Amino acid sequence: MAAKTAPAVSFKDRITFEDLIERSGIRFRLKNSVSPRRYSIETMLGGVAVFDYNNDGLLDLFLTNGAAIPSLEKTDPTHWNRLYRNNGDGTFSDFTEQAGVQGIGYSMGVAAGDYDNDGFVDLYITGVNTPESD
Ligand SMILES: [Ca+2]
Ligand SMILES: [Ca+2]
Image (tube, rainbow, N blue to C red; front, side, top):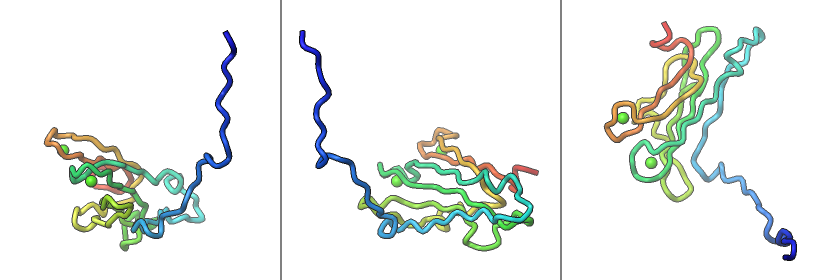
């Protein structure tokens, strides 16, 4: 029996990448409010959930974001967590306000699952200075 060799890969078959963020509609910027005190939370955020929040068969995005330091308050929309609905054509729409998921406090992580078995995925967001962290 002859030894098998790996198939030849030509350079034309190489994987290429294209930066599509500009036309995607995703305008998220992680804001961890770096401080001279270098609090540990500054390096512990940036949770992402990829899930279908509206059950349309298209994966949507939820991104956690920080807050001002030292208040740990989301003092303006640049600190909001963001929910982006997948439009199905390579673009996303910001549904953060419609869904009421801007967040409170310094958000760090997120888990997704159907907690109450109603057929819609729920989010569990972790962080500091949230009502649950008192
Ligand atoms: Ca969806
Ligand atoms: Ca649910």
